[in-house]
Structure formats: structure tokens, C-alpha cells
Image (cartoon, rainbow, N blue to C red; front, side, top):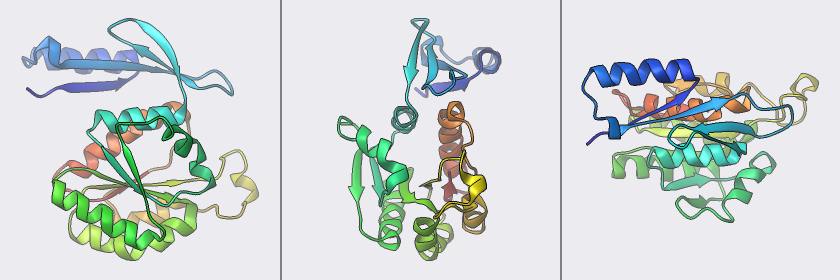
Length: 212
């Protein structure tokens, strides 16, 4: 049967699971993870509901785990320096395959085709403002096809954005004309929740691309 996964603060988890049980969801089909605020300069923490253990999770690990929880098995991408931690994770990642491409428009077409052929979510990983800009033409086709594609792009460190470093840009604003929903991650502990929200939004009728 269908399983329900809830991620967030304890109060929200309890409320959602309580409503689900009232609606007759089987207890064994309900799953939850509580995300806690990270100590300064450290990975954020996840409290595993079943074992009541708290573990440290690095941001790139949380992204991959959220993608795996939503059935993602492939990522199409052209990474850069902001994606280096994610690339390091793929040295040991076995459940998700990273498909490297040399130009963003071609990769966008690949992600588009995969989403339509699989009738499921597809993930496209780009690099900062130029990477997203190079993909915009094909992203129009993704939008017209109502293909559920999660487009991600690394951003420069938010600590330095005020200095306008090279390659920085207002990425959600750039993406919004071509996607259903666009958001920027400003806090590391929000990563899993925003990944889940992005995928659910992409798959909700009418399906379409989203940006994170």
C-alpha cells in the first residue's frame, strides 16, 4: 500500500500523523524523521523516530537521502565547484546514478525525456547562474511538456552573496518564468523539507518543472 513520509519539527509530525491515523492509515505505513537545528558550523541533526537515535547528517547526504526516499535513481548534471560536496558523495553512493553531460541544454532534454518516459520525477543538476541560463531554452520545452523535472543549481556561499561574487545571481527569480515553483535554500536544516516539497509540487497535477 501507499506509505506516508513526514519530515519536519515534532509538532508538525505529530499533527500530520495524527490526522493520517484518524483517516485509517495503517501504522506500519507511517514514517517520520524530525529535523533539528544544526550547531554552528556543523552538519544538522536528524532524529530517527523508530530508534529515537540522533545522527549528524551532512547537507549533501540529506539531499541524496531525500531523493532516494522519493524514488530517484538518476541525476542528470553538469556540476561545478558549488557541487563538489555532492560529487564527493557519489564516490560511495550506489542507489543513485549521476549522468554527466557537457552542455546544459542537452542535459535538460535528457531529463525531460526521462521524466516523460518513466512517468516519474527526473532531476537535473546545474551550476550557478550561467548553468541555469544555458538551460533556459530547453526548460521552456520541459514546461510545455508538463514534465516533472526537479532542477537544482548551486549558489555561492550565502555568507558572501552581499559582496556580489562572480557567478552569483537571483536563481529562483531567473527560473520562475519556466517552472511551477522556485525556492532558494537559506538554512541547511531546510534542505530535506524543500527537496520533498519540490518533488511533490512537480508531481502534483498539472505536473511540471520546479527549481531549487
